[in-house]
Length: 408
Image 1 (cartoon, rainbow, N blue to C red):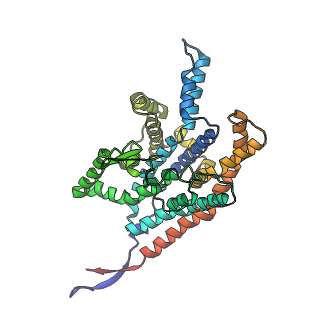
Image 2: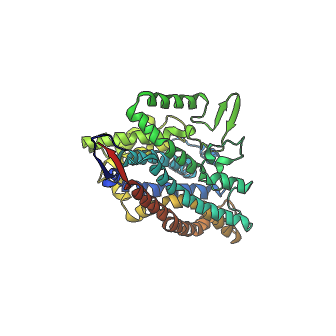
Image 3: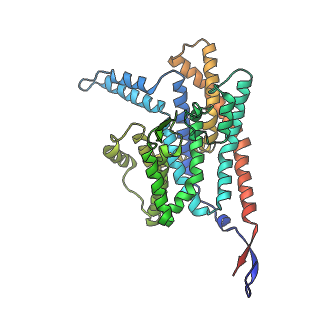
């Protein structure tokens, strides 16, 4: 329908597809490092070595004066503690998601339905591929993941909303069948609300106040920074911080970093301070502030940000290694499939006669686990993940190029 005296014509709605969105290739290398950090953490966990055990061993070292051996022991335990702390790289992933999603939303300007369809296809098909493999292992009597009420967990995790469900409603819902599944739910929750958050940031007004009210409510109910919430006198708990209010701050930091990145790029600032000096200054100011799970991710994110705004530093050049970028391309598949391989590799090492908890069984386990993880990652990426992404891209282009009626 058009008004009298107006002209009617059709126009392809392709503005969002007209110019390619910049791809931050350096982030692919960071994704590879973070994904394999998670792999290492879960492999160490198979030794029944918990972070608190490492802390106890570190505290047992007696340090008197300049004792090089003792200093090296403490350093070794610190490195082992970081390697075992698998949530640290996951939190960096969240900041990275906040950064990238803000970039996509501000440049592509897709309709919400198309945006959500593409985000869904980015996560769900590969996740379902993994869940089907877990189901196959469960059916043949060789369960690899959490197996209590398996089919209930399977159905809940297939929705990608399992992270919202507290233990009191469905036991260990956030733990999921596979170890990393709790953070996949967080990603999906963030994808759903991210466009509204951006609108609140940009337009302000009542939207900004609504966002503020929601964040305040999350604090009021005790969800932010904890794994529990108190609602009308009832306390609800989560195995992992898998509901978005628990840990929204990391996503928000990534979102804010994107707008800072844009300002730095517009000002054409090229920091001349050596990277190591910048990191040391940051560590000196905030390195000893906050819980252990908070400070390391922020420091790592600072390093990521520096590599985004600079070129030519030793770290930037190192991250440009093609093999590392390829591992980054398949990093999501690595992240969600590796817990299929590690238990199998551990069983193989046990059958070969290596003692549980020993360094030998860990090394043998990794010899078998790494090839299996790479094979699963390649299958998942090239046959599930990549085709799904391409399908989403094709569908988006088809929907965006449908003629629209305009009234002038």
